[in-house]
Image (cartoon, rainbow, N blue to C red; front, top):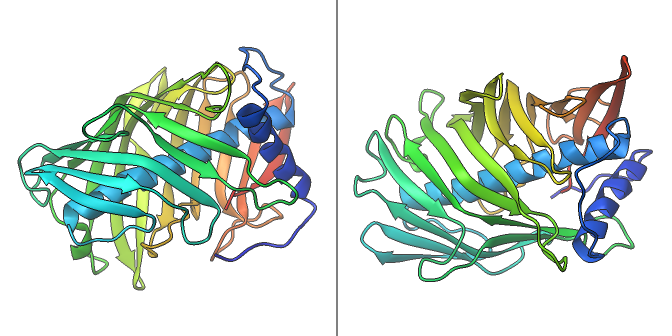
Length: 321
């Protein structure tokens, strides 16, 4: 994957990664208070939201891939058919570019209706089928001298529904699509799994994820599908690492290019979210260059803005990988 040069925004990268490093490795307990006017805190909230959703998307897409095609391959993972309608993906290695490694399992229980049929559902669990456990992503820093920065762990179950039917490999033209409804009400996650006292944060999901093709590339488009907390177009909501409730409003559908099935970065190339419910709501615009302008091709990162004491504050954050 293409690496980006060092720019004036390297301070932002180091700041965000250092937060993850501190929480992951120095056994610091999180608190329920923070200074919302602090750009580091705001950046951390926005950065976490992107990272959690990117990894959740990849986990779900892996399951959809193997449900659609039992001969599909996933980098750093092994797929196995355990019994009729029960499958498992076991993760064991770094992904090809070496920036992250996944461990644990994606256990898939199909409801008995073939996945290609309209209305078919499957339950995904962040664990081995026959034991307790979790699903973990270890991140490796791209900024020397840090050697590793954090890990993200998920627990719980997700339900996916094939809304209109069809298989992923059948999406071969601009007129084809596969639409999945993703729901979860008991998922939790943590960034500080190396701490002496592990603290998990709640995560709820209600999203529509559509797969389409254009110019020989496959794209996933995601939008929120519920109203909750007094907000509309909410796709994910729960508690952030500061102990605050939040609601992610997909103000503009999130689009990802997932063409390379061997190496999926999952960084959005466009879209807008508003993180609601916190003291200073954050608007995130995805797919910008290092000056904050929306661009085509491989994006640098995303821009965020919020209002601090009636004054708008802004920042530009790089994607982690």
